[in-house]
Image (cartoon, rainbow, N blue to C red; front, side, top):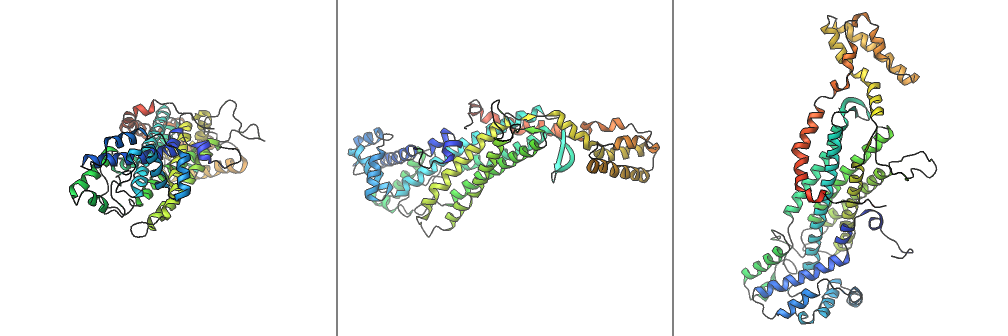
Length: 476
């Protein structure tokens, strides 16, 4: 495209070639021709012998050979994109001129092609999700037992492990994958339904034979790999389907946003960072900086996808009776862009998840800074077991904890709580060193992580083995 014309950053910076191809004019209009071809084949198979073998052969040869300039000329004249492509196809397959689009409405090609494209888009995104889950699974296994501060309200809380936290990120994406797999398995075709969905035109073609109309619907649906077509439609399939699909993509976006935000927070704490390349520039002014630009970019894309949910929902709500055309201009934007942005988001997340950098010493320092406070209950119990009075020990620990916290917060000094407690005669029988092993405070985090990887992640790896072997390059 010329440099003086707008280019969508989804196409130039984010989405993969595979997703861009799915939503390309070539893919869309080739599918229209394939739909017309399969409709004609089914009609001939069911007895419409005016559809000749030569007509079928010419249509088949011209399926992918589209003269887009000619189609544009026709559309300029007719102001109707489907009829423009009917005429363009007819010129490429003249023997089929009088039977292309026979009995069909525009939505036969438009809706069915959209459903095929969206189904393939969902499959591609499912593979992307599997890559993210696999990368996070490998990271979780590596760091399953490294204690780290948990944070609630972004305040230090009980310990968890770096690996357990990664397993939690992965679990969100596992839920998203389950939603996509369900949608792929249950997505229905519009099929062969006619102008307002009554199949009246096809009933006329087959001289009132209902069984042939039903057979034609099934033949075309089967030939495009759909187990079912909708029994009931208006002129279009229910636009609730689009809304459901975009909500699924928004769910993925929410998971990606959560993951990327967490990495940004951890980067600010200097505990975990996204990968940073040798020649990468973090800031044009502050040369020392390592800004989390991939995660920031991911959250921006995620926010965009989440914002798109309202369009298909409003479209579904505002479809008048059997159909109104206000869905079309909106759908041309909201559906492709939701898929393209989610694709770019998952490429970023997979890249970051596969290259996370862990700073163990910083993590250990943060743990050690807070651990004395977290160990106070253990110290209290140990003091009681050694014969001390629970209430007396509690008051000693409380006073020293408050003073140690003041030293840290107001004076910027190290946490000296243990040194203070070591001087208390009441606690002389307590081995304070024994209660300061961080692994005493991570519970079953390592075991939970291992079980999650075994029971949840490994089956996903098995299902998507072929996809996980592909190499994926991050754009820009």
